[in-house]
Image (cartoon, rainbow, N blue to C red; front, side, top):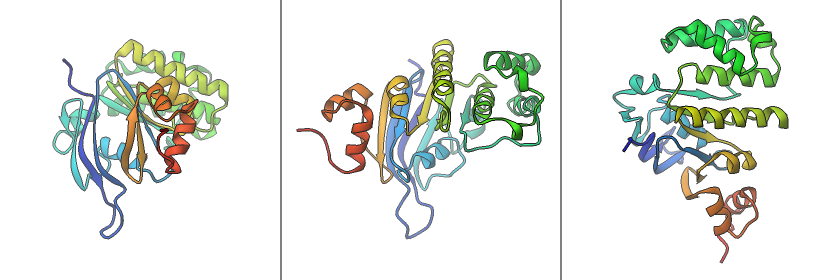
Length: 248
């Protein structure tokens, strides 16, 4: 049986002594090949959790194991097998799309990098602006380039922070279809943080509901909708955010 994609044990993060923790005692195990979602309002701890999973933040307590690698001791072995995308993390504006992807291909030691970049450019419809500086791209084009960057090393774990934020409905649907196809083809696990509840209902097998840095409920989207007696996940989200609890 394959090891979990992510194993978090008592994961905790406090930024400053005396302040309330941003994340408190998270325990979860995401299976390989699954798509999970982190949901919660602003300040719930989603981005902090992702940063700890990436090894960008050192936990104040607890342990993270990614793809069988303890992030405290084997971070670089794990990073070679995973990747990350967020519309809030800009690529160098002066570099062209081709140059940006080439840099990341070398950082990940991607074999036959030129062929891999050409493959992604074709699949993500980047060919018409490969030699344009990243700073001159539209929001939708930047998102497609960010997704290409996140797939450059064929990751076994893909972490996504608001992958379709600011996109029009057509481009957002296109990105979601691409992620579904990548998971089906590669068997990769995906963990996404999103405020788009319809997106989560479509993509996620399992949802972790965060509030004040804690997991307050979890389950499949359908299970959560049924448990709270609601019509969709957005209504469940609002119930939890407003402290209204489950249906009787």
